[in-house]
Amino acid sequence: QVMLVESGGGLVQAGGSLRLSCGPSKRFFDFNVMGWYRQAPGKQHELVATITSGGSTNYSDSVKGRFTISVDNAKKTVYLQMNSLKPEDTAVYYCNEPWVAAVGSWGQGTQVTVSS
Image 1: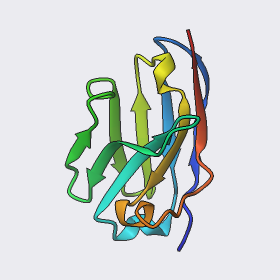
Image 2 (image 1 turned 120 degrees about the vertical axis):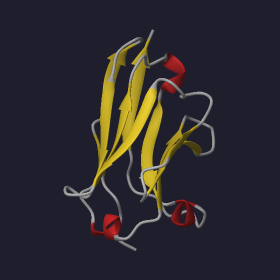
Image 3 (image 1 turned 30 degrees about the horizontal axis):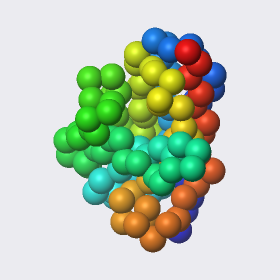
């Protein structure tokens, strides 16, 4: 399984913004659904956003209205625009296909830290 590479994390103050990137990867040539997940210390992975190959999106209630998932097919990259960040958004963020996530295969992720 080709691992996905996430980037764009960092330290930001509450209310700030970050844009995460995932890719480029050949896995985006024929994906059906791609998701952004996060894992806070001591917690399990949480699915926060998904996008289908047709462009349909879905968000968890905790990020709805603040985060936007998108895909650039030409660049074979998936993005997560995060606005109005809160300290509770602090986590390691991963992109993954749900069926790969289900078997516990993850990349390195990118750390997002939101200070209050």
